Amino acid sequence: MIFGVGSGLQTIHWTQASGKPISVRLLQGNVDQDMKFDPEYLNASLALYRNMLTTAPADLIVTPETAFPLLTSMLPQDFLPRLNAYAQQTHSALMLGVVVQDGPGRYTNSLLGFSPLHAERAYRYDKHHLVPFGEFVPFGFRWFVHMMNIPLSELSTPDQMQPPMAVRDQFVMPDICYESLFGEEIAVQLSHQMATHQPVATILLNASNLAWYGDSFAMPQHLQFAQMRVLETGRPWLGITNTGSTVVLNADASVNAQLPHLTRATLESTVQGFSGTTPYIFWGNRGILVLVLFILLVTCWFSQRKARK
Figure 1 (cartoon, helix red, strand yellow):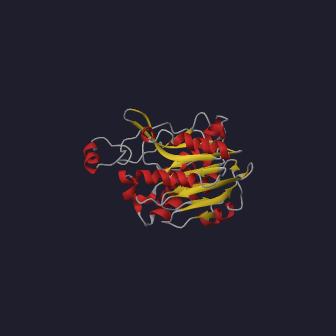
Figure 2 (cartoon, rainbow, N blue to C red; figure 1 turned 45 degrees about the horizontal axis):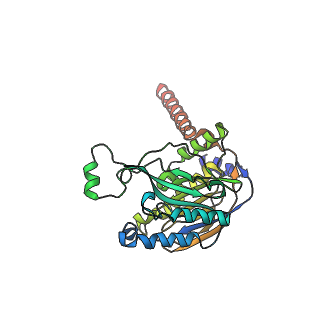
Figure 3 (cartoon, rainbow, N blue to C red; figure 1 turned 90 degrees about the horizontal axis):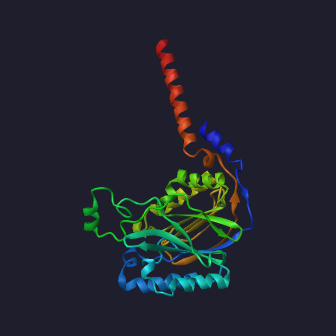
């Protein structure tokens, strides 16, 4: 029954194309994890992604998570202003993976956006679903983090509801790293945007750094997470990673374009945004929980009926 219903539902298009397609450039720098936070390599890393960003214009140009492995307060004074100026001159939108410092001891794993619409004040998305030990310290385990000397191991936790970034006539909703696992959180954000009459995301975006996992099953697994989010929301997906899988997914979860793993390259493509709602955006995980509860109740009923006979 599940396979039959699933096959039939593939013929239903819950969302529809919205606005004009945008051109994208997704940057895969392939920086080895052992070198990423090495002080001797920091200047080379900054230059690498700055050059990749400014090689050619596009409607949207994106770096991976923490592509610039320095706090914003530690970047060269003219670094971000020069990238902002490039965005204004070329009418491009840039989305940069950085760690933002908001004050003493207050840091966020963020994406900063510069575009003609964000010339005076950068767009900002902050990661809200943090990784235990890597980004926040569970109670009683501070000794472990100190022993392992994990960099940037205690980040601030922002609000889950954050607006998408306007790019031309599309709205791009980012998330960072393994936030792509949590489909219910993405659905809640879309539902909230619709309910509050805010701009509703038409394209989903994930910026990650999978160099931690080397050449393992984590990269194709990360792509499978993305394909599930596309099927749930009916929206195309941009996946930007440091080592792979950097990919553009169509609104039906098929692969539009993809870079090989563990290569330094730029993925150039065109993406059509989609709008509308899906059953998963409306129900979230409640739908599957109701179905499971119904199956349990029916099973109990048949079991009791059999016992009485």
